[in-house]
Image 1 (cartoon, rainbow, N blue to C red):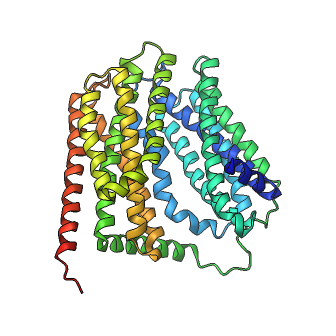
Image 2 (cartoon, rainbow, N blue to C red):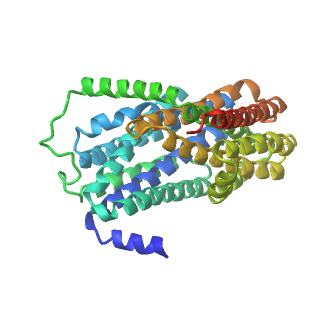
Image 3 (cartoon, one colour):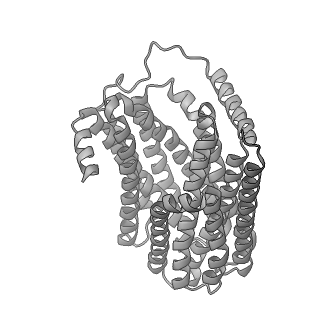
Length: 429
């Protein structure tokens, strides 16, 4: 297989192997820690799970990525990246141990969330540093392959860590503390593994001129504002982002509903609830894969806006048809459909932004895209606190989401028709 052959070539680079080991251990710890947070909030018997608690957990997991991400590079270009991996993972190991102590002592929930927020915030620096260090450990000819395979391997490691955490939780009779301590051990191993890399190897070069941090942060903020102004001038990209933000909002609201259904309506035990949640996530992941296969053909047939309209229109029809029964089998089918719809629209949106936005603004616009993508998901969870009852069955939520999907479909069709009309009205040479 080409992927296996390419990975074999990369593994001949000794320092690439070491950097990959740091990534795998760090991201497997991320998977463990995220499962610990999610299961503590949703499935712990001592907790009375509410949509508000789920919204808080999602904010802790997602907001640091968006709010810190655009500014992380300013500091990463000043600090030795090997030291970021060392001290960042040591700090996360210590914070995870603090989280375990909070769980043992039944501390106030805000302390638990504060500790978890610090862990996920540090993660933004570690992941960005891993990407920035990659050109230092492979040659230019293999950099594209490394950029493709290394993050994929990290995602697989996070998935494996999540599976390991679920297994440990079942073996320890639902002990969140044991799962958090497992994450701490993996963070510690990642930190120790980074010591195998020479301190100066990963950069940045010590002789480089650095502007002051305050100036660099100000320049970054000004750049994001300029990116927003540029996006306002690129109507197609702005429309695609607006549509994707609403679609992501819908997906977030339905995710909270499924979590509540798994916790209260569909199961009598924690293990059954976790199993059903795993099936729902698997169905959604299958939809993501189907979107990756279908979207290149469908975009060629319907266009980017047309395919987004098809996705939103399909969700508007199928989501209430499958979801209003509030029973597992139809909802699993709905999870597949929504995974396909969400990822299909995202691929079309990514392509629209890449082709409509000037190259010099593309990075800043994608930073804004990342903020919208995650903030809309958290906002949906917050909105769900108003609509969802204790067992997760909410006809109002299902119909509201269907109406939002329908609105996106109509808007995309109108914009497609308007663009076609404007092109036909232009005089030809």
